[in-house]
Structures are given as C-alpha cells and as structure tokens.
Length: 498
Image 1: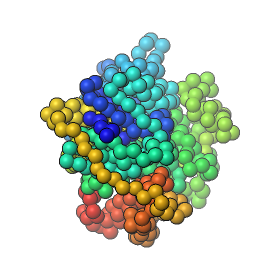
Image 2 (image 1 turned 120 degrees about the vertical axis):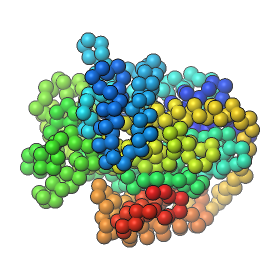
Image 3 (image 1 turned 135 degrees about the horizontal axis):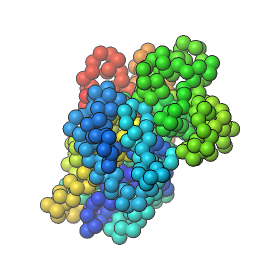
Image 4 (image 1 turned 135 degrees about the vertical axis):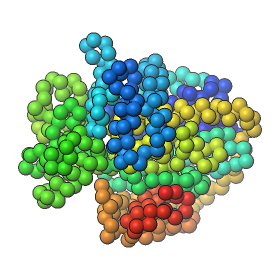
C-alpha cells in the first residue's frame, strides 16, 4: 500500500510551506494537480503584507486596515494571529532564500496597495508569488522525507478509522494513497466564472470533496472581484494589473479619459478592492460604457519598467506600452474569502483534516480581502497546521488503512458543455453584485446539473471531477446568495454554516 503520514493536496505556497514545517521523520506526499508551479500562488504579483523590522508600523495598524477592508466581519482571534505572527514567516522565507526587493540603503522596499495605511508590502518586483513559490519548491525538493507527485488529480477522499484514503488519477492511471493526517491546500474557485485571474487548476476540487465528506463550508459567496484585470475581452484567464500599480500612483479613468473615484470614495484609487469594483460598475451605469482604463503614463518610464517588468512585458505583447498608453481594465473574479471552515490551527470539523490557503475559511479576510494578505495567510496557518499535526502524530501511532474504491472505466463520459453552462450562470447571476432577479433560476439549474453529475453513473476522469467541483461550488455560492437575498441569513443548506 502507498502509505504516508501526511498527504498534502496542493503544491502552492500553503502546501509547500506546510511540508517544510512538518518534522523530517514524517513521510509526506504532496499532490500537484498539474505541473508544480501552475497555481494561484505563482500568479500573485503584488507582494506579502506584514510588519517586520518596521519601526513606524505596528501589527495593530495592520489589523485595523484588515478589518476596515473586510467590513469588520473578520474573525478577531485569527486576525490577531495573522498580523502578530507575520514577522515569524517573513523572516523564515527570507532565510529560505526569498529575494525581496531592497532600497539603495539595503533596507527592504515596502510598497503600498489599496486599503493599507502604511507601506508594509514586501515584494519581488511584480512577481512576488512566483518568487516565493519557486523558492519553497526548490527547498522542498531537497527534503528526503517529502515526495511531490505532479499531474495527479484527486478524485475522491474517504475518511477511515485511522486516517484518509485518496483515489487519484495520475496521468491515465488510478492510484490510491493513504495517510494518517491530511492538509487540503487546493486553492480557489476562479474557473467557475467565464473570466478570472486564476490559473487553470482553480476549480474548487478540495472544497467540493470536503463538502461531500461533511466538512463545514462558510461564506463561499464572499468572492472578491479584482477591479483592474486587463480587459482583452477574449481570454478566460485574465491577466492581472497589480494593485501595486495604483499604489505607485496610477489613475483610474472612465470611457471619457476622466478620473472618477472622487465621486465614490475619499480614498480614491487606493480604496479597497470591493469598493473600487463597485465604483466601476456604478460608473459604467452612469456613462453607459464598460470601457475603463488604468493610467500610470505620468510616471517616469524607467521607474515603471523597473518596478513592473512582468506587467510591462505582458502588456507590450498585447499591444500596450504602459509608459505611454492607458491600460484597458475591468473587474474580474480574483479571490475567495470563504471556504472550508477552520480554526486557528487550520483544523476542520473532521478529525485529522486540515485546510490552508485560499480553499480555507480562517475568517481573517472578512467579506473582502485586504491586498497582499493572501500569501501571508497561507504561510501563517499552514505553519500552525504543521505544528498541530506534528503534536497529534506523536500521540497517534496507528498505521493508515486503504478504502476499497471501485472505478468503472467503461462508464459513459459526461456530456459536453456542462462547465461552460455553469460559468455562464455564475457570470450572469453573481458578478460583483448579485443579480437578484436571476439568482433563484440560476440556483435551480445548477442544482439540476449537480444532481445529474452525482447520479448519472459517469466515468471518473478529469472532466468529470472538475465539472462536479464547479457544480458543487456554484450550488453552495448561489444557495448562500439566495438565502441572503431572500432575507434569511441563516443558511440551511446541507453542510453549510452561516
């Protein structure tokens, strides 16, 4: 049997850092759905927020900004941990080799983003997530007790008396892996929308499987739409124009080339993301146009190229020179604040199941994530999960057992077009602000689709797993949204929690 002490589903920052913080005498398997660097962590541009060697800033200031951005719906205990333990993990990843940008005097350069009252965001140019992801990945590959298995999709997970059993599809081959404890670090749900900044793997698989196992899911309808995705109107995966561009002085402009944020919020371009996204929608209604732009052409061209090399390069490929041209932008699905509900050690209500990163709901983000808090959350709570697992496994010496999965390789494949229909429903009914008139009809159709997948006897393959995940995610999101729109905020759907 393929037995491990810990299986980590997900190879982003949360999954890798969890593996790094587990004891070296534990046998660990990290499952990567595709190649190891294809994840939302790698796409994070702006940076990682935190108070570290910052005499003019404080964790309390960071907490205040986090609460304001989150509509004061943040969990106080979890947020206290986030801002106060930031220095531990920023220091650790620097020692692991993460190369944050520095000022000429040798201090770390800290940038500003919307919602922050201080310059507290550490960054590696405009590719911070990729820098952290690849640095952690290189280190994990040196650990003799950790195995990374790429191109492996998790099809099902069953709780056993001694742990968990995973049914996976490795390429074209089904394999079963067993463990004593597990961490779900499977990322977000962006591919449930027609347009998203998320990577191709972000179909909500971990959330869907946890839901089916009986894990509590909380605030899945708390979805963040980033206001400044590059508006090419063609590609499903939209290139993100980092919040840091506004932090360095870019202006938001409407179809007439006029700034407009002064009409909606006193913080102007540096208002939190949800405020800016709502403002763009309101301005679109006022002007009758969805043409919007981000303009930083008034800044020094060499500074722009040096500060945002990746964004500059990608925009040039699309025909725009950000040192001269206004950049077409529009809101786009970006991040998930809700997810698998966990405590401050990333523990779910299922014994031995932990969730970290974007697939989890720690409560630190409230109803809107403060910029650059996501990488920090992934680090802080995966480290805490690893510490709790290490303690539990010292006390529990049971060997994992294997669940007898059955797979019918001759079953029919799912009908084509299911995922496309789900995405259209979500884009139409729940984009930036819910379309209340269409919510119930969308929920009914998504429920029908999901029931058809669950009861249709279809072949288990990548298409089926992702379609079922998207249908489950859409079902939970629209269920919550409909309950709220109906005035009944007590969510009563199976396995959800207000």
